[in-house]
Image (cartoon, rainbow, N blue to C red; front, side, top):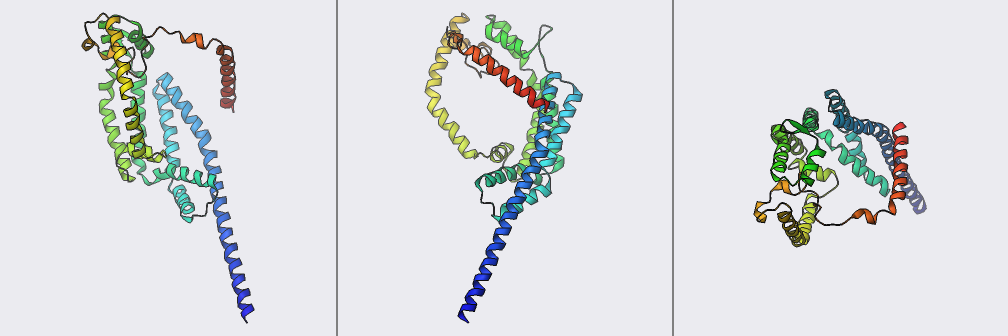
Length: 306
């Protein structure tokens, strides 16, 4: 009798193990199938979307921006699909994905499909607003004394001109893009924050970082640490830059320096104040670099032809 009970328990254990293994295998296969479907849709769609965005930014044509907008909505609709999110939640809650790579893919996909919890009308509104602002930026041209300047023209004036008054005119004219898009940007910020709050985040910035697999607190901590570590060195370098430009523009003191005197629109690049010819250090590498660029260009042509 005792032996019979043992055999029955053993048989039950085998059945449970078999059932568990079967469920685990099914969940893993379901996730693999989901990933395959996701990639088959998103890879070509992403390619179309990025090319359309590029074409729109180059041409500035309304029809190109409309195409880019439609493709972005199509991509958003895919990630806002509630059935897809439901399937991922089912797999995630099961806890049966043990493979580390699959588990990571599940985590990334789940965060991508969180948009399914948002209001579709708000998501589409957000995309339309973004597209309209991008179109205004793309078609804006700096105008000074009746002459329209490209962004490259503006940068060249700020980088090489010693005419401080003309620099100021060009810089101020370029900043007129601000009032042109200010009201639209404020409206977009409000819509973005509404979407973020609907999903349980404080604001769009926090949502973007979190869904991008970054902890907002960690990011803040890193930048605070960077600021602390580089503050002294930056102050010293900025002092050297200011001293140089006071002499370069023949000014009386650093107090006369203005934003347009630092050789670029946003003070995002170090101005060229040292007599260093960097080309000397790259002469040997030019041939190999040229070959590499040809190879990259060929690879991109092959890719876009696929």
